[in-house]
Image 1 (cartoon, one colour):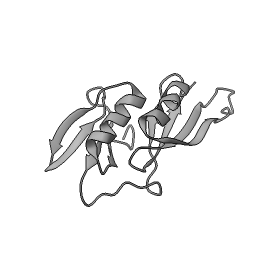
Image 2 (spheres, rainbow, N blue to C red):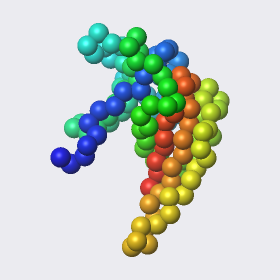
Image 3 (tube, rainbow, N blue to C red):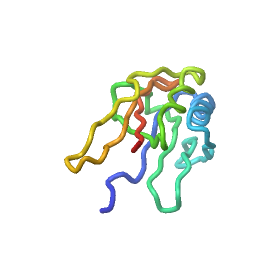
Length: 127
């Protein structure tokens, strides 16, 4: 096993609103898809790499208390964090330095936000 992550799903109540939110904050496009009778918006990913989707399904409820995933925040989290309030979300934890590994190499930065659906989601940047 190269990585334990193969797929994730972020539950949403309003798929159109959530899709706009994530497209706005990540400055990317999500691909609409119907899978197993559920409407989804798929995050961009390289072929064969882990990915995930926003999913509108009655048995799934958005929550800030559930599993926490971290999205790739790119080179610097500041640009994404700046777009979150205007897109309808809020910052839950500001950009935080994770310190250094024993070899002196920086671990990176994380931040947490509450999306427009009420989910708590993390961002990670190696810089």
